[in-house]
Image 1 (cartoon, helix red, strand yellow):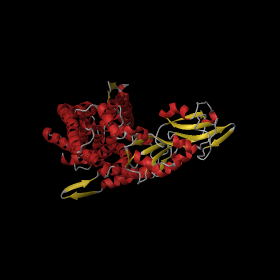
Image 2 (image 1 turned 45 degrees about the horizontal axis):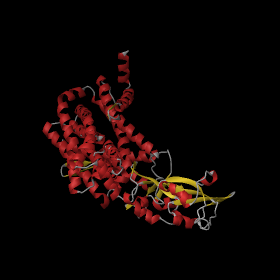
Image 3 (image 1 turned 30 degrees about the vertical axis):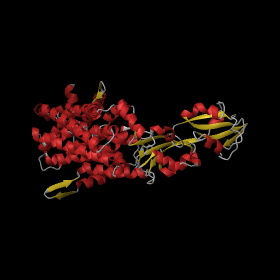
Image 4 (image 1 turned 135 degrees about the horizontal axis):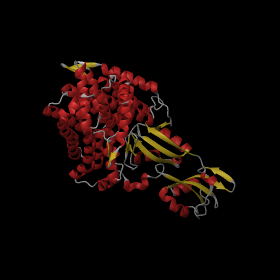
Length: 560
């Protein structure tokens, strides 16, 4: 029975690939405390295990799966990467460059110290920095080396082993460093520091920050019987109480849709939008609350709008709110802002950039009008423009094949670098023109997660029996080298970010997590501080480092 199973896997390598993916994901979900391996490391480990029986997997599969992953990374990072190329985010870009340059220097130093080959060195960088893109672009570079097939296979096997050995500490070590060690080194209390930054971003002007049109809202019905209400127009009453917006008036059996010039009478039932914290005062301002279905059923809608207006980009929420306020802005509210899928703090001094997604809710006409001023509405859709993305990978691959020379040194992007660049460009263009190149978040996740997990599984399977020998030979050295590669770059970036670039600690901690492309570290900071402010630093550094670290793969192969 066992011989039949092993024979089936050897004869049908596609079964082995999917088995490594499935069992690897299940392994990656197992938790020890708050730690878990994750699907990629799990798939690679299961690939290494299954690969011991000698499964012959086509090498081309590795390139196909990596192309899916690296394209999705580029598409997601494109808007933020190109948006970060401005004076306002220069410090964060510099921090990413410092961390990535330091990481490359430490990786090459470990190569010289322990005499690793190019495969071990690339895997060391990918695992210790938890950036699998390094392994993918390095693998493409290995394929271009003037070596025989057996030597290339050995280098790829060593790369998989080094990644597997260094990945665990790369994940846990960075979480501990960013969440515990870094705050202690700077003498920072996370909650206090977060509150300080929130005050700097305008939390002391919270009333202003959440005034119309920017707030979360509630809907209420009240009968008008306050002495100052009757005889006033809707516009007069709203001007007196700017925390509410009257959307519908019921007078007996008559329904009056919003008309700012309508004169109110005692006994009118008003359908109202109001700020949540103002609900307790509505009874004093207007009259008693009533349960009246018709007055509460005025039309509303929600919309996600991509900020593309150049005049409003790189401005604070306060500035944008002021620029857009007018009589007909009443009844339209901001319910959230996201950048690369991460929520930004809704504070007056939070700076918005082109490509940010602004969620609006309120009166349909006001939502339409405000969306037109901000940018382009992102229509809910589950369809993916597969033709555009397939062509993007084609042209990216062709671009990666181009090469030039600096002196006698050959320089080329490689297949992975070319596809990443095309993903960046198409993602950036789609953020400004959503009608072309649609790739919904769920599809982005599928491209990225499946592509990367399958890539890890194939790398593990290809490593085969040679992996065991490599572990015995270089295992201890890789553990030590991996710890140094994980900790030295963020340590250097921490002090440069704080004392040279003068970044606020909360933004700096988020930036460190982003610069090492590790979202789990940022989530730890958010959890401990109770604030979303680290997202401000994370997104720029995440986008920039995704590109820089991917480029490091071929550089490591060339220099190691």
